[in-house]
Length: 563
Image (cartoon, rainbow, N blue to C red; front, side, top):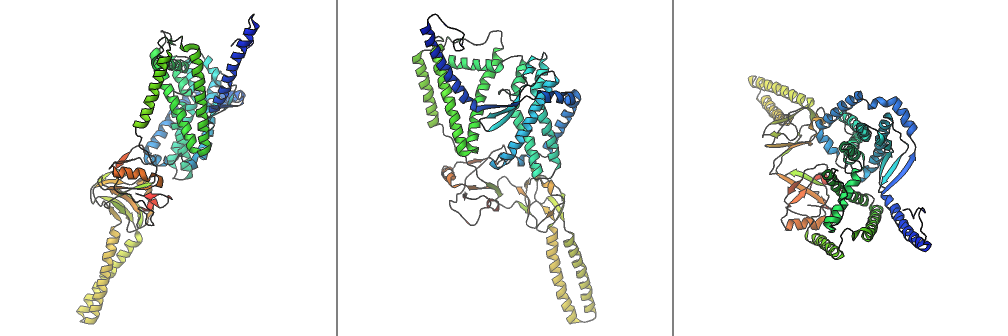
Protein backbone atom coordinates (compact mmCIF):
# COMPACT_ATOMS: atom_id res chain seq x y z
CA UNK A 1 0.00 0.00 0.00
CA UNK A 2 2.85 2.38 0.86
CA UNK A 3 4.67 1.56 -2.37
CA UNK A 4 1.49 2.13 -4.36
CA UNK A 5 1.12 5.54 -2.71
CA UNK A 6 4.73 6.47 -3.59
CA UNK A 7 5.79 6.79 0.06
CA UNK A 8 8.33 3.94 0.19
CA UNK A 9 11.34 3.06 -1.96
CA UNK A 10 14.53 1.01 -1.60
CA UNK A 11 18.20 1.40 -2.42
CA UNK A 12 17.80 -1.14 -5.18
CA UNK A 13 15.95 0.97 -7.74
CA UNK A 14 15.42 -1.92 -10.14
CA UNK A 15 13.79 -4.00 -7.39
CA UNK A 16 11.68 -1.02 -6.33
CA UNK A 17 10.57 -0.41 -9.91
CA UNK A 18 9.70 -4.10 -10.35
CA UNK A 19 7.70 -4.16 -7.11
CA UNK A 20 5.98 -0.91 -8.11
CA UNK A 21 4.95 -2.33 -11.47
CA UNK A 22 3.71 -5.62 -9.97
CA UNK A 23 1.71 -4.05 -7.14
CA UNK A 24 0.35 -1.21 -9.25
CA UNK A 25 -0.92 -3.65 -11.89
CA UNK A 26 -2.77 -5.63 -9.24
CA UNK A 27 -4.24 -2.47 -7.74
CA UNK A 28 -5.46 -1.32 -11.18
CA UNK A 29 -7.11 -4.70 -11.64
CA UNK A 30 -8.80 -4.49 -8.26
CA UNK A 31 -9.97 -0.95 -8.91
CA UNK A 32 -11.48 -2.02 -12.24
CA UNK A 33 -13.29 -4.94 -10.65
CA UNK A 34 -14.42 -2.71 -7.81
CA UNK A 35 -15.92 -0.17 -10.21
CA UNK A 36 -17.67 -2.96 -12.09
CA UNK A 37 -19.02 -4.32 -8.81
CA UNK A 38 -20.37 -0.88 -7.89
CA UNK A 39 -22.98 -1.34 -10.61
CA UNK A 40 -24.87 -3.54 -8.16
CA UNK A 41 -25.00 -0.67 -5.63
CA UNK A 42 -24.71 2.55 -7.65
CA UNK A 43 -24.61 5.55 -5.32
CA UNK A 44 -25.74 8.98 -6.59
CA UNK A 45 -25.16 11.91 -4.16
CA UNK A 46 -27.66 14.76 -4.58
CA UNK A 47 -26.31 17.48 -2.27
CA UNK A 48 -25.97 18.72 1.30
CA UNK A 49 -29.33 18.87 3.14
CA UNK A 50 -27.95 19.85 6.57
CA UNK A 51 -29.48 23.37 6.58
CA UNK A 52 -32.89 21.92 5.68
CA UNK A 53 -32.75 19.40 8.53
CA UNK A 54 -31.51 22.05 10.96
CA UNK A 55 -34.58 24.19 10.18
CA UNK A 56 -36.87 21.15 10.34
CA UNK A 57 -35.45 20.11 13.72
CA UNK A 58 -36.07 23.56 15.19
CA UNK A 59 -39.70 23.65 14.04
CA UNK A 60 -40.72 19.98 14.03
CA UNK A 61 -38.60 18.57 16.82
CA UNK A 62 -41.78 17.76 18.76
CA UNK A 63 -42.23 14.79 16.39
CA UNK A 64 -39.38 13.09 18.22
CA UNK A 65 -40.85 13.66 21.68
CA UNK A 66 -42.72 11.29 24.01
CA UNK A 67 -46.14 12.94 23.45
CA UNK A 68 -46.02 12.17 19.72
CA UNK A 69 -44.81 8.68 20.66
CA UNK A 70 -48.10 8.09 22.46
CA UNK A 71 -50.03 9.39 19.44
CA UNK A 72 -47.93 7.15 17.18
CA UNK A 73 -48.75 4.08 19.26
CA UNK A 74 -52.50 4.83 19.32
CA UNK A 75 -52.61 5.38 15.55
CA UNK A 76 -50.59 2.21 14.94
CA UNK A 77 -53.00 0.10 17.03
CA UNK A 78 -55.97 1.76 15.31
CA UNK A 79 -54.54 0.94 11.87
CA UNK A 80 -53.84 -2.68 12.84
CA UNK A 81 -57.40 -3.10 14.12
CA UNK A 82 -58.78 -1.54 10.91
CA UNK A 83 -56.91 -4.07 8.75
CA UNK A 84 -57.79 -7.00 10.97
CA UNK A 85 -61.47 -6.04 10.81
CA UNK A 86 -61.38 -6.30 7.00
CA UNK A 87 -58.60 -8.84 6.57
CA UNK A 88 -60.46 -10.68 3.79
CA UNK A 89 -60.72 -7.54 1.65
CA UNK A 90 -57.11 -6.62 2.41
CA UNK A 91 -55.95 -10.12 1.42
CA UNK A 92 -58.03 -10.03 -1.76
CA UNK A 93 -56.40 -6.74 -2.83
CA UNK A 94 -52.97 -8.33 -2.48
CA UNK A 95 -53.79 -10.31 -5.62
CA UNK A 96 -51.92 -8.78 -8.53
CA UNK A 97 -50.29 -6.08 -6.40
CA UNK A 98 -46.87 -6.65 -7.97
CA UNK A 99 -48.08 -7.29 -11.50
CA UNK A 100 -46.09 -5.57 -14.23
CA UNK A 101 -48.85 -3.02 -14.92
CA UNK A 102 -48.73 -1.78 -11.31
CA UNK A 103 -44.96 -1.34 -11.17
CA UNK A 104 -44.99 2.31 -12.26
CA UNK A 105 -47.50 3.26 -9.56
CA UNK A 106 -45.60 1.24 -6.97
CA UNK A 107 -42.33 2.81 -8.09
CA UNK A 108 -43.70 6.33 -7.66
CA UNK A 109 -45.13 5.57 -4.23
CA UNK A 110 -41.88 3.81 -3.26
CA UNK A 111 -39.80 6.91 -4.13
CA UNK A 112 -42.07 9.25 -2.15
CA UNK A 113 -42.11 6.93 0.87
CA UNK A 114 -38.34 6.46 0.82
CA UNK A 115 -37.78 10.22 0.71
CA UNK A 116 -40.09 10.49 3.72
CA UNK A 117 -38.19 7.62 5.39
CA UNK A 118 -34.81 9.31 4.97
CA UNK A 119 -36.18 12.66 6.13
CA UNK A 120 -37.00 11.07 9.47
CA UNK A 121 -33.40 9.85 9.81
CA UNK A 122 -32.12 13.35 9.10
CA UNK A 123 -34.65 15.02 11.41
CA UNK A 124 -33.86 12.82 14.42
CA UNK A 125 -30.10 12.99 13.83
CA UNK A 126 -30.19 16.81 13.70
CA UNK A 127 -32.54 16.91 16.71
CA UNK A 128 -29.88 15.19 18.84
CA UNK A 129 -27.08 17.49 17.64
CA UNK A 130 -25.69 15.55 14.68
CA UNK A 131 -25.05 16.83 11.16
CA UNK A 132 -26.37 15.49 7.85
CA UNK A 133 -23.83 16.50 5.19
CA UNK A 134 -25.08 14.38 2.30
CA UNK A 135 -28.22 12.82 0.80
CA UNK A 136 -28.79 10.88 -2.37
CA UNK A 137 -30.05 7.74 -4.06
CA UNK A 138 -28.65 4.21 -4.25
CA UNK A 139 -29.73 2.09 -7.21
CA UNK A 140 -29.77 -1.57 -6.25
CA UNK A 141 -28.96 -3.55 -9.42
CA UNK A 142 -30.00 -0.43 -11.38
CA UNK A 143 -33.65 -1.41 -10.73
CA UNK A 144 -34.55 -0.63 -7.12
CA UNK A 145 -34.06 2.98 -5.93
CA UNK A 146 -33.11 3.34 -2.26
CA UNK A 147 -32.70 6.78 -0.73
CA UNK A 148 -30.03 7.56 1.84
CA UNK A 149 -28.90 10.37 4.13
CA UNK A 150 -25.48 10.47 5.71
CA UNK A 151 -26.37 10.34 9.40
CA UNK A 152 -23.05 8.76 10.37
CA UNK A 153 -22.40 11.62 12.81
CA UNK A 154 -24.84 9.82 15.12
CA UNK A 155 -22.14 7.19 15.80
CA UNK A 156 -20.44 9.80 17.97
CA UNK A 157 -23.47 10.15 20.26
CA UNK A 158 -22.61 9.10 23.81
CA UNK A 159 -26.05 7.54 24.34
CA UNK A 160 -26.69 4.32 22.46
CA UNK A 161 -30.42 5.00 22.74
CA UNK A 162 -29.99 8.19 20.72
CA UNK A 163 -28.05 6.19 18.10
CA UNK A 164 -30.84 3.59 18.05
CA UNK A 165 -33.44 6.38 17.73
CA UNK A 166 -31.66 7.73 14.63
CA UNK A 167 -31.45 4.23 13.10
CA UNK A 168 -35.11 3.45 13.83
CA UNK A 169 -36.45 6.87 12.78
CA UNK A 170 -37.23 5.91 9.17
CA UNK A 171 -39.11 2.77 10.19
CA UNK A 172 -40.93 4.78 12.87
CA UNK A 173 -42.11 7.35 10.34
CA UNK A 174 -43.14 4.85 7.66
CA UNK A 175 -45.17 2.74 10.10
CA UNK A 176 -47.06 5.89 11.09
CA UNK A 177 -47.89 6.56 7.43
CA UNK A 178 -48.91 2.90 6.99
CA UNK A 179 -51.29 3.15 9.95
CA UNK A 180 -52.89 6.36 8.66
CA UNK A 181 -53.30 4.81 5.21
CA UNK A 182 -54.85 1.68 6.76
CA UNK A 183 -57.42 3.76 8.65
CA UNK A 184 -58.38 5.70 5.52
CA UNK A 185 -58.45 2.49 3.46
CA UNK A 186 -60.99 0.96 5.83
CA UNK A 187 -63.26 4.01 5.44
CA UNK A 188 -63.39 4.35 1.63
CA UNK A 189 -65.26 2.28 -0.93
CA UNK A 190 -63.32 -0.11 -3.21
CA UNK A 191 -61.82 1.76 -6.14
CA UNK A 192 -58.71 3.60 -7.30
CA UNK A 193 -58.25 5.48 -4.00
CA UNK A 194 -58.66 2.27 -2.03
CA UNK A 195 -56.05 0.57 -4.24
CA UNK A 196 -53.53 3.39 -3.76
CA UNK A 197 -54.02 3.38 0.03
CA UNK A 198 -53.62 -0.39 0.08
CA UNK A 199 -50.32 -0.08 -1.80
CA UNK A 200 -49.10 2.56 0.66
CA UNK A 201 -49.92 0.24 3.57
CA UNK A 202 -47.97 -2.63 2.00
CA UNK A 203 -44.95 -0.54 0.99
CA UNK A 204 -44.77 1.32 4.33
CA UNK A 205 -45.16 -1.73 6.53
CA UNK A 206 -44.37 -5.11 5.00
CA UNK A 207 -41.53 -4.07 2.69
CA UNK A 208 -40.11 -1.68 5.31
CA UNK A 209 -40.02 -4.39 7.96
CA UNK A 210 -38.67 -6.94 5.47
CA UNK A 211 -35.77 -4.77 4.29
CA UNK A 212 -35.12 -1.77 6.55
CA UNK A 213 -35.82 -3.56 9.83
CA UNK A 214 -34.03 -6.73 8.75
CA UNK A 215 -30.79 -6.91 10.80
CA UNK A 216 -29.20 -9.31 8.28
CA UNK A 217 -28.77 -6.44 5.82
CA UNK A 218 -26.73 -3.33 6.51
CA UNK A 219 -29.76 -1.10 6.81
CA UNK A 220 -31.54 0.35 9.84
CA UNK A 221 -32.20 -2.96 11.59
CA UNK A 222 -28.53 -3.89 11.52
CA UNK A 223 -27.41 -0.71 13.27
CA UNK A 224 -30.18 -1.07 15.84
CA UNK A 225 -29.06 -4.64 16.60
CA UNK A 226 -25.38 -3.69 16.75
CA UNK A 227 -26.10 -0.95 19.28
CA UNK A 228 -28.41 -3.16 21.34
CA UNK A 229 -25.74 -5.86 21.52
CA UNK A 230 -22.91 -3.34 21.98
CA UNK A 231 -20.91 -5.08 19.24
CA UNK A 232 -19.30 -2.53 16.89
CA UNK A 233 -18.64 -3.74 13.32
CA UNK A 234 -20.92 -6.73 13.86
CA UNK A 235 -21.34 -7.34 10.13
CA UNK A 236 -17.61 -7.25 9.36
CA UNK A 237 -16.78 -9.54 12.25
CA UNK A 238 -19.55 -11.94 11.25
CA UNK A 239 -18.25 -12.09 7.69
CA UNK A 240 -14.73 -12.83 8.90
CA UNK A 241 -16.01 -15.69 11.04
CA UNK A 242 -17.98 -17.07 8.05
CA UNK A 243 -14.85 -16.93 5.92
CA UNK A 244 -12.85 -18.68 8.64
CA UNK A 245 -15.46 -21.44 8.88
CA UNK A 246 -15.28 -21.90 5.11
CA UNK A 247 -11.49 -22.06 5.09
CA UNK A 248 -11.25 -24.26 8.19
CA UNK A 249 -14.05 -26.76 7.60
CA UNK A 250 -14.64 -26.67 3.83
CA UNK A 251 -11.13 -26.17 2.50
CA UNK A 252 -9.49 -27.99 5.41
CA UNK A 253 -7.04 -25.25 6.44
CA UNK A 254 -6.29 -26.37 9.97
CA UNK A 255 -3.84 -23.53 10.63
CA UNK A 256 -6.34 -20.78 9.77
CA UNK A 257 -6.37 -18.30 12.64
CA UNK A 258 -9.71 -17.62 14.29
CA UNK A 259 -10.47 -13.90 13.67
CA UNK A 260 -12.08 -13.09 17.06
CA UNK A 261 -10.58 -12.58 20.48
CA UNK A 262 -11.69 -14.85 23.31
CA UNK A 263 -13.22 -11.89 25.14
CA UNK A 264 -15.67 -11.23 22.30
CA UNK A 265 -19.17 -12.74 22.04
CA UNK A 266 -18.15 -15.50 19.68
CA UNK A 267 -21.48 -17.37 19.61
CA UNK A 268 -23.61 -14.33 18.76
CA UNK A 269 -21.18 -13.08 16.10
CA UNK A 270 -20.87 -16.54 14.52
CA UNK A 271 -24.63 -17.08 14.27
CA UNK A 272 -25.12 -13.59 12.88
CA UNK A 273 -22.32 -13.99 10.33
CA UNK A 274 -23.67 -17.28 8.97
CA UNK A 275 -27.24 -15.96 8.80
CA UNK A 276 -26.15 -12.73 7.08
CA UNK A 277 -24.08 -14.67 4.52
CA UNK A 278 -27.01 -16.90 3.59
CA UNK A 279 -29.41 -13.96 3.44
CA UNK A 280 -27.03 -11.99 1.20
CA UNK A 281 -27.02 -14.81 -1.35
CA UNK A 282 -30.83 -15.13 -1.17
CA UNK A 283 -31.34 -11.39 -1.73
CA UNK A 284 -28.89 -11.10 -4.63
CA UNK A 285 -30.31 -14.17 -6.37
CA UNK A 286 -33.86 -12.97 -5.76
CA UNK A 287 -33.13 -9.52 -7.19
CA UNK A 288 -31.43 -11.02 -10.24
CA UNK A 289 -34.39 -13.33 -10.91
CA UNK A 290 -36.83 -10.45 -10.43
CA UNK A 291 -34.89 -8.22 -12.83
CA UNK A 292 -34.71 -11.03 -15.41
CA UNK A 293 -38.48 -11.58 -15.30
CA UNK A 294 -39.69 -7.99 -15.03
CA UNK A 295 -37.46 -6.48 -17.70
CA UNK A 296 -37.31 -9.56 -19.93
CA UNK A 297 -34.35 -9.32 -22.35
CA UNK A 298 -32.71 -6.27 -20.74
CA UNK A 299 -33.20 -7.72 -17.26
CA UNK A 300 -31.71 -11.03 -18.35
CA UNK A 301 -28.64 -9.29 -19.80
CA UNK A 302 -28.23 -7.30 -16.58
CA UNK A 303 -28.52 -10.47 -14.51
CA UNK A 304 -25.94 -12.29 -16.65
CA UNK A 305 -23.61 -9.27 -16.51
CA UNK A 306 -23.82 -9.02 -12.71
CA UNK A 307 -23.30 -12.78 -12.32
CA UNK A 308 -20.20 -12.59 -14.53
CA UNK A 309 -18.85 -9.73 -12.39
CA UNK A 310 -19.44 -11.72 -9.22
CA UNK A 311 -17.73 -14.80 -10.69
CA UNK A 312 -14.71 -12.80 -11.90
CA UNK A 313 -14.39 -11.04 -8.54
CA UNK A 314 -14.69 -14.35 -6.71
CA UNK A 315 -12.01 -15.99 -8.86
CA UNK A 316 -9.73 -12.97 -8.51
CA UNK A 317 -10.08 -12.88 -4.72
CA UNK A 318 -9.56 -16.63 -4.46
CA UNK A 319 -6.39 -16.55 -6.57
CA UNK A 320 -4.99 -13.66 -4.52
CA UNK A 321 -5.79 -15.47 -1.30
CA UNK A 322 -4.24 -18.74 -2.47
CA UNK A 323 -1.06 -16.91 -3.43
CA UNK A 324 -0.68 -15.01 -0.17
CA UNK A 325 -2.18 -16.94 2.72
CA UNK A 326 -3.33 -20.40 1.72
CA UNK A 327 -0.10 -22.32 2.32
CA UNK A 328 0.58 -20.45 5.55
CA UNK A 329 -2.83 -21.47 6.87
CA UNK A 330 -2.22 -25.15 6.15
CA UNK A 331 -3.79 -25.64 2.73
CA UNK A 332 -2.79 -28.85 0.99
CA UNK A 333 -3.27 -28.56 -2.77
CA UNK A 334 -4.12 -32.24 -3.20
CA UNK A 335 -6.79 -32.12 -0.52
CA UNK A 336 -8.15 -28.90 -2.00
CA UNK A 337 -8.54 -30.55 -5.40
CA UNK A 338 -10.24 -33.57 -3.83
CA UNK A 339 -12.60 -31.41 -1.79
CA UNK A 340 -13.52 -29.22 -4.77
CA UNK A 341 -14.08 -32.33 -6.90
CA UNK A 342 -16.28 -33.85 -4.19
CA UNK A 343 -18.29 -30.66 -3.89
CA UNK A 344 -18.80 -30.40 -7.63
CA UNK A 345 -19.77 -34.09 -7.69
CA UNK A 346 -22.41 -33.55 -5.01
CA UNK A 347 -23.83 -30.53 -6.82
CA UNK A 348 -23.94 -32.44 -10.12
CA UNK A 349 -25.60 -35.44 -8.48
CA UNK A 350 -28.16 -33.16 -6.83
CA UNK A 351 -29.02 -31.55 -10.17
CA UNK A 352 -29.65 -34.96 -11.74
CA UNK A 353 -31.23 -36.80 -8.83
CA UNK A 354 -33.35 -34.13 -7.15
CA UNK A 355 -36.46 -33.75 -9.24
CA UNK A 356 -38.03 -30.32 -9.16
CA UNK A 357 -41.73 -30.31 -9.93
CA UNK A 358 -42.42 -27.46 -12.37
CA UNK A 359 -45.06 -24.94 -11.44
CA UNK A 360 -47.55 -23.21 -13.68
CA UNK A 361 -49.57 -20.04 -13.29
CA UNK A 362 -53.06 -20.29 -14.74
CA UNK A 363 -56.53 -18.85 -14.09
CA UNK A 364 -58.74 -21.35 -12.28
CA UNK A 365 -62.19 -21.51 -10.74
CA UNK A 366 -63.38 -23.60 -7.82
CA UNK A 367 -66.98 -24.61 -8.42
CA UNK A 368 -69.52 -26.91 -6.85
CA UNK A 369 -70.24 -30.22 -8.48
CA UNK A 370 -73.68 -30.71 -6.96
CA UNK A 371 -75.45 -27.36 -6.81
CA UNK A 372 -74.51 -25.46 -3.67
CA UNK A 373 -74.96 -22.11 -5.41
CA UNK A 374 -77.45 -19.65 -3.92
CA UNK A 375 -78.78 -17.44 -6.71
CA UNK A 376 -81.44 -14.78 -6.67
CA UNK A 377 -84.69 -15.56 -8.52
CA UNK A 378 -86.76 -12.53 -7.55
CA UNK A 379 -84.73 -9.29 -7.67
CA UNK A 380 -84.77 -7.10 -4.63
CA UNK A 381 -83.00 -4.90 -2.13
CA UNK A 382 -80.82 -6.91 0.24
CA UNK A 383 -82.04 -5.76 3.65
CA UNK A 384 -80.94 -8.51 6.04
CA UNK A 385 -78.01 -10.93 6.14
CA UNK A 386 -78.05 -13.75 8.65
CA UNK A 387 -74.71 -15.47 7.89
CA UNK A 388 -71.10 -14.56 7.21
CA UNK A 389 -68.30 -16.05 5.16
CA UNK A 390 -67.00 -19.45 6.37
CA UNK A 391 -69.99 -19.95 8.69
CA UNK A 392 -71.37 -23.48 9.07
CA UNK A 393 -75.08 -23.80 8.14
CA UNK A 394 -77.70 -26.54 7.95
CA UNK A 395 -80.02 -27.31 5.07
CA UNK A 396 -82.97 -24.88 5.06
CA UNK A 397 -81.32 -22.24 7.28
CA UNK A 398 -82.31 -18.67 6.44
CA UNK A 399 -79.31 -16.95 4.82
CA UNK A 400 -80.57 -13.56 3.68
CA UNK A 401 -83.76 -11.59 3.05
CA UNK A 402 -84.48 -9.30 0.10
CA UNK A 403 -87.25 -6.74 -0.30
CA UNK A 404 -89.19 -6.08 -3.52
CA UNK A 405 -92.12 -3.74 -2.75
CA UNK A 406 -93.39 -3.81 -6.34
CA UNK A 407 -93.77 -7.60 -6.51
CA UNK A 408 -95.24 -7.83 -2.99
CA UNK A 409 -97.79 -5.11 -3.87
CA UNK A 410 -98.62 -6.94 -7.07
CA UNK A 411 -99.28 -10.14 -5.06
CA UNK A 412 -101.52 -8.28 -2.62
CA UNK A 413 -103.51 -6.69 -5.45
CA UNK A 414 -103.87 -10.12 -7.01
CA UNK A 415 -105.11 -11.60 -3.74
CA UNK A 416 -107.65 -8.77 -3.50
CA UNK A 417 -108.78 -9.55 -7.06
CA UNK A 418 -109.12 -13.24 -6.14
CA UNK A 419 -111.35 -12.32 -3.19
CA UNK A 420 -113.53 -10.16 -5.41
CA UNK A 421 -113.77 -12.94 -8.00
CA UNK A 422 -114.94 -15.41 -5.38
CA UNK A 423 -117.67 -13.03 -4.21
CA UNK A 424 -118.92 -12.55 -7.79
CA UNK A 425 -118.84 -16.30 -8.42
CA UNK A 426 -120.95 -16.95 -5.29
CA UNK A 427 -123.39 -14.19 -6.23
CA UNK A 428 -123.86 -15.59 -9.74
CA UNK A 429 -124.55 -19.06 -8.33
CA UNK A 430 -127.05 -17.65 -5.85
CA UNK A 431 -128.85 -15.72 -8.63
CA UNK A 432 -128.92 -18.83 -10.82
CA UNK A 433 -126.77 -17.28 -13.56
CA UNK A 434 -125.05 -20.50 -14.56
CA UNK A 435 -123.15 -19.18 -17.59
CA UNK A 436 -121.87 -16.13 -15.71
CA UNK A 437 -120.79 -18.25 -12.74
CA UNK A 438 -118.87 -20.66 -14.99
CA UNK A 439 -117.04 -17.77 -16.65
CA UNK A 440 -116.18 -16.28 -13.28
CA UNK A 441 -114.90 -19.67 -12.08
CA UNK A 442 -112.54 -19.84 -15.05
CA UNK A 443 -111.32 -16.31 -14.29
CA UNK A 444 -110.85 -17.25 -10.62
CA UNK A 445 -108.79 -20.34 -11.55
CA UNK A 446 -106.57 -18.21 -13.79
CA UNK A 447 -106.04 -15.64 -11.03
CA UNK A 448 -105.20 -18.34 -8.48
CA UNK A 449 -102.69 -19.92 -10.89
CA UNK A 450 -100.96 -16.58 -11.36
CA UNK A 451 -101.02 -15.98 -7.58
CA UNK A 452 -99.49 -19.38 -6.89
CA UNK A 453 -96.56 -18.65 -9.21
CA UNK A 454 -96.17 -15.18 -7.74
CA UNK A 455 -96.16 -16.54 -4.17
CA UNK A 456 -93.37 -18.95 -5.13
CA UNK A 457 -91.53 -16.10 -6.85
CA UNK A 458 -91.75 -13.70 -3.90
CA UNK A 459 -91.00 -16.50 -1.43
CA UNK A 460 -87.53 -16.67 -3.05
CA UNK A 461 -86.85 -13.25 -1.50
CA UNK A 462 -85.93 -15.31 1.56
CA UNK A 463 -82.77 -17.18 0.57
CA UNK A 464 -82.23 -20.49 2.35
CA UNK A 465 -79.35 -22.96 2.42
CA UNK A 466 -79.80 -25.64 -0.28
CA UNK A 467 -77.72 -28.07 1.78
CA UNK A 468 -75.54 -28.34 4.86
CA UNK A 469 -72.05 -26.94 4.50
CA UNK A 470 -69.88 -23.85 4.83
CA UNK A 471 -70.89 -20.44 3.48
CA UNK A 472 -68.56 -19.25 0.72
CA UNK A 473 -69.13 -15.57 0.01
CA UNK A 474 -66.58 -12.78 0.37
CA UNK A 475 -67.54 -9.32 1.60
CA UNK A 476 -71.24 -10.16 1.88
CA UNK A 477 -71.71 -7.29 4.33
CA UNK A 478 -70.86 -4.83 1.54
CA UNK A 479 -73.98 -5.95 -0.36
CA UNK A 480 -76.47 -4.89 2.33
CA UNK A 481 -78.59 -2.05 0.98
CA UNK A 482 -77.81 -2.86 -2.67
CA UNK A 483 -80.17 -4.06 -5.41
CA UNK A 484 -79.58 -7.68 -6.37
CA UNK A 485 -80.48 -8.62 -9.95
CA UNK A 486 -82.11 -11.96 -10.81
CA UNK A 487 -79.70 -14.79 -11.54
CA UNK A 488 -76.88 -13.24 -9.56
CA UNK A 489 -74.78 -15.64 -7.47
CA UNK A 490 -75.00 -14.23 -3.98
CA UNK A 491 -73.06 -16.97 -2.23
CA UNK A 492 -72.62 -20.72 -2.22
CA UNK A 493 -72.81 -23.38 0.44
CA UNK A 494 -69.73 -25.49 -0.07
CA UNK A 495 -69.47 -29.14 0.88
CA UNK A 496 -66.00 -30.61 1.27
CA UNK A 497 -66.79 -33.56 -0.99
CA UNK A 498 -68.44 -31.54 -3.76
CA UNK A 499 -65.77 -29.18 -5.12
CA UNK A 500 -64.23 -29.12 -8.58
CA UNK A 501 -61.25 -27.10 -9.83
CA UNK A 502 -61.47 -25.87 -13.42
CA UNK A 503 -58.11 -24.67 -14.82
CA UNK A 504 -57.41 -22.73 -18.01
CA UNK A 505 -53.84 -23.87 -18.70
CA UNK A 506 -51.41 -22.57 -21.30
CA UNK A 507 -50.32 -24.85 -24.13
CA UNK A 508 -46.73 -25.12 -22.86
CA UNK A 509 -47.97 -26.54 -19.54
CA UNK A 510 -49.96 -29.30 -21.17
CA UNK A 511 -47.26 -31.95 -20.75
CA UNK A 512 -46.97 -31.27 -17.02
CA UNK A 513 -50.70 -31.75 -16.50
CA UNK A 514 -50.79 -34.81 -18.72
CA UNK A 515 -47.93 -36.37 -16.78
CA UNK A 516 -49.70 -35.67 -13.48
CA UNK A 517 -52.88 -37.29 -14.78
CA UNK A 518 -51.09 -40.39 -16.09
CA UNK A 519 -49.17 -40.81 -12.83
CA UNK A 520 -52.34 -40.19 -10.77
CA UNK A 521 -50.44 -37.45 -8.97
CA UNK A 522 -52.37 -34.78 -7.12
CA UNK A 523 -52.15 -31.18 -8.28
CA UNK A 524 -51.07 -28.72 -5.58
CA UNK A 525 -52.47 -25.24 -6.18
CA UNK A 526 -52.18 -21.92 -4.38
CA UNK A 527 -54.67 -19.11 -5.04
CA UNK A 528 -53.05 -15.78 -5.80
CA UNK A 529 -53.00 -13.53 -2.76
CA UNK A 530 -53.34 -16.48 -0.35
CA UNK A 531 -50.64 -18.31 1.61
CA UNK A 532 -52.50 -21.63 1.89
CA UNK A 533 -52.18 -24.45 -0.61
CA UNK A 534 -54.67 -27.16 -1.54
CA UNK A 535 -54.45 -30.45 -3.40
CA UNK A 536 -56.78 -31.84 -6.05
CA UNK A 537 -56.90 -35.04 -8.08
CA UNK A 538 -56.60 -34.34 -11.81
CA UNK A 539 -59.64 -36.04 -13.31
CA UNK A 540 -59.61 -35.03 -16.97
CA UNK A 541 -57.85 -32.87 -19.55
CA UNK A 542 -59.34 -31.37 -22.68
CA UNK A 543 -56.42 -30.62 -25.04
CA UNK A 544 -58.35 -28.58 -27.58
CA UNK A 545 -59.90 -25.18 -28.02
CA UNK A 546 -63.64 -24.79 -27.55
CA UNK A 547 -66.36 -22.22 -28.09
CA UNK A 548 -68.08 -23.49 -24.95
CA UNK A 549 -66.05 -22.30 -21.90
CA UNK A 550 -65.79 -24.64 -18.94
CA UNK A 551 -66.80 -21.70 -16.73
CA UNK A 552 -67.94 -18.16 -17.53
CA UNK A 553 -65.17 -16.69 -15.34
CA UNK A 554 -62.55 -18.20 -17.68
CA UNK A 555 -63.74 -16.33 -20.77
CA UNK A 556 -61.54 -13.24 -20.27
CA UNK A 557 -58.00 -14.78 -20.28
CA UNK A 558 -56.89 -15.39 -23.85
CA UNK A 559 -55.07 -18.48 -25.06
CA UNK A 560 -54.66 -21.86 -23.43
CA UNK A 561 -56.78 -24.89 -22.84
CA UNK A 562 -59.28 -25.78 -20.16
CA UNK A 563 -58.65 -28.83 -18.01
